[in-house]
Length: 327
Image 1 (cartoon, rainbow, N blue to C red):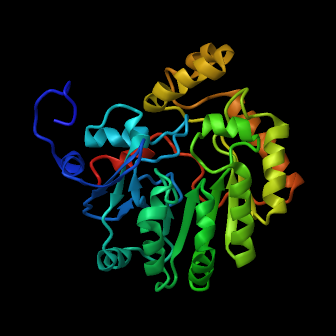
Image 2: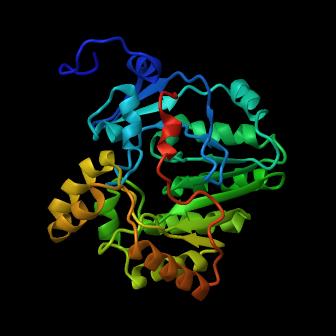
């Protein structure tokens, strides 16, 4: 058993693999494990989403974002305490020939997206370089359509390689920047790189010739949803060479509520009741608010001459079904 209070039973699937994973490295707060995987590229069966294939080099994420929607992916490994998502990180054991073989299943016109659940440039990437090794394989391909979503300036490390890949493939990178207020960013995303560092990565990538978008996701009512806040992000994105901009309201599944509601109670207690009322029964906001944000973002986007988002923005209801029982 992984925890003393768990009932006895036989672990299967991804939970069994996780339990058998070897500890690669441990820091004061984080443990890294190596995870065997049956496949690196997952197929998206949701026809409402604009990408067909998904790649997540890591399970779990160190950034500790209070709103993270992917925390429940750890539950498939029988790791049910929310904080374990950011303290037990699983690096998939990479095998380049297998990855190259999986790419053969991708048909022309189908889109691959890296980082749909966990950040491919989180601190683990500095040690294990799995994202980098995947890109080195992708550099030998032609005619692919793929993108990356991250909130780490580490992606700038691979600017030259991404530019090389872009010569024979359609490539774009999304940098998530929820606010330019450094103090607020530190509260919301305690271990993610500062917003100015992410903007620096936008500039590095665009100067290398890589198409970049900025995602102001998630938009949290009464926290980062003012027109001034969103306009500042969009303006900075444009000034650093981004070609598209997107923002969408907070999506809050029960697994995320376990972390986000206590966060509100500590830092925004006057908002806790409103959030509970609006999110406890539905993970998505409905009605006037989403439409208001959509109109606000469109006006801001037009003001700075940026395009609409061309890639995955914010998950629809069943996105995380993609990760159930999948290593």
